[in-house]
Image (cartoon, rainbow, N blue to C red; front, side):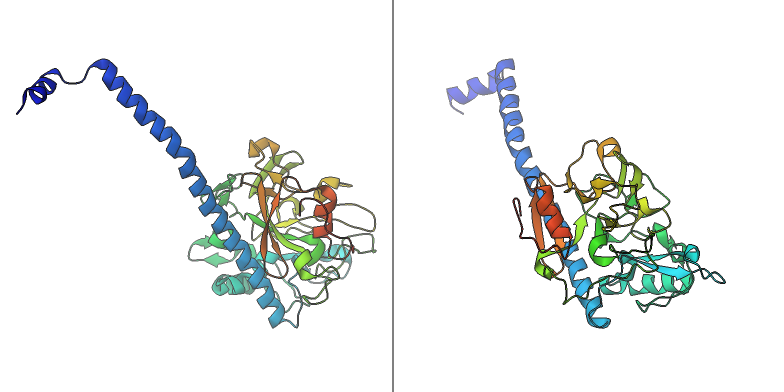
Length: 329
């Protein structure tokens, strides 16, 4: 052992040298953390995009099964012995209807067996399929992984954070203007919520029309308390909880979520913070940084940035306005 080695071994580290080493390590960690966060967010965004892609393909497969029909935003059933419109109730949400095409056929069968609904899109009877018994408990508490975005901060172990133990949540919602009826002139929301278009006759084209968008599983704040529950039918029963957005009556400009609520036509919220008070359940909402993912009816997925104008967003969600896409698309 030479003299320098013996000297260093004897002296050890001084306090200043130790602090310098700690400072260098802290700087390195500070440089690495943003990179790790970016990688994590990129992975979450990829997973989210894949989920929307699956929903798009499920819609295409549903259309192939039912003579090009689009799945309804929710089904309706007739209360036995009641023939008036007031006797109509809600049934299966669009996310329930698409279960067989999301590799969840057993859950769908259990839902339908309990609700006694006809799986044919033309109608049915019965209700309450969300309470169907499964090996994991009642159906409404069963989480569906493809319906969950890793970036959704309002999701708690598969539940909407304001419905833990009650209803499993979804990070995605269907476009009411496409999958539902928006031009009903009967004075109500109609006797059916079947889609008004087929997959091949959307006036603005399937590649220019949004079918699905990100939407937080739980929202309570801007427009009141609501959520996005995959098995909740919405419609006439608890409209604020169903997996839908842009519920809008074009003939008299009203929404089932609130009379004359024009928020339903606004672009998505981008990371509303905190979600518990600043999230608006009547609008799509994204947990990604300045980006919201949407699924188009041709099965593709694209990113929408915070620069999108309200006019452009409305062009993308209305399937028949005939307008050309504007800024931010």
